[in-house]
Amino acid sequence: MTNSAPTTAAPSSRPGTLFGIPIGELGWFSSLLMGTATGFAAFFFGTFLGIISILIYNTSTHHTVDFTLSYRRVGLPLGLITLAIAYTFLATLWTRRILRKA
Figure 1 (tube, rainbow, N blue to C red):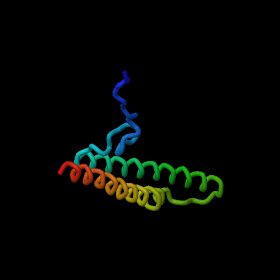
Figure 2: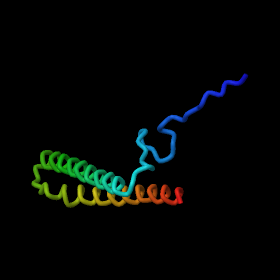
Figure 3: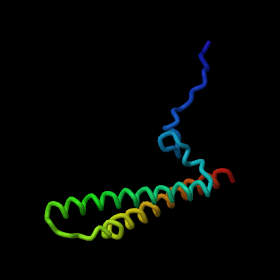
Figure 4: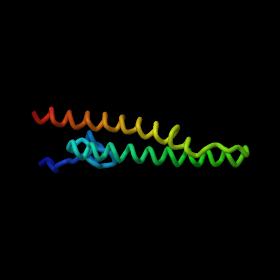
């Protein structure tokens, strides 16, 4: 007799998953929400790094660089680029799922 136990793949090895989260199975609104959240997170992370960098630069060189540059030159471009990449990736996954069902 052969052992015919069902084999299941690990959740992280399935296509369209990220850390076990089924990203390929999100609807259009969920994809929009996830992409926006990713863009916001990148904006705040980039702004934080910009503020810390300007703080270190101002402290070490005794210059006065305006902290608003961290929003305009670091946080906003990083957030917008990440938002565009996330929307493109999630829209591709959503479109593939819709076309696969048809």
